[in-house]
Structure formats: structure tokens, C-alpha cells
Length: 86
Image 1 (cartoon, rainbow, N blue to C red):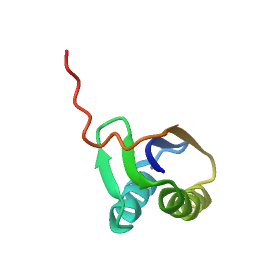
Image 2 (cartoon, rainbow, N blue to C red):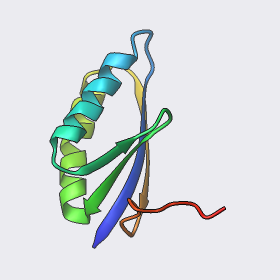
Image 3 (cartoon, rainbow, N blue to C red):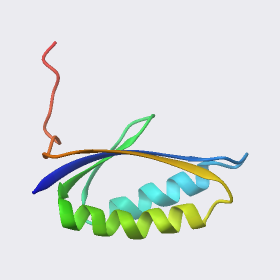
Image 4 (cartoon, rainbow, N blue to C red):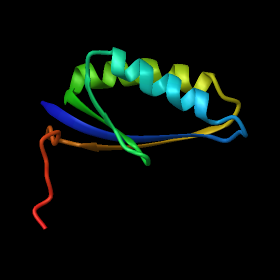
């Protein structure tokens, strides 16, 4: 089963960019299909692979900040080729 995940990591600190960059860099190096935009990051692939990597990377990202928010949406399908038709 393939999934599409949209996530937004928001460290609640003044110097918020380095933990975000670290998370995105780790996700890029994971071998998963990753797309970024200014508001979120999308990850696509098989459920078990994606969730196993996200479990590790989320723990590292949240451990790197004192306070932070992690928003995640999961869609049951691989939507990496989706293009709006409007």
C-alpha cells in the first residue's frame, strides 16, 4: 500500500530554521521521494517504508528542539504525480 504524507515541522524557538533544514535533509537522504514547498514537505512511497523512516526522523527532529509542533497528514495513495486541473 502506497501513501502520501504532508508534514510541517514548526520549532517554537527563535532559531527555528536549522532543525527544519536538518529534518528535510535527512528525509532527502532516506531514499524516499520527497518534495518541498514553502509551507510543507511531501513524502511518497510504500506505507511501511515511509512510516519506519518517519518514526526515526520525527524522534530526531523533536529531540533537537525544546518545544515544537509537527503536523502530519496521510493519504492512502501515492499522489506524487498529481496536478490540479483547474
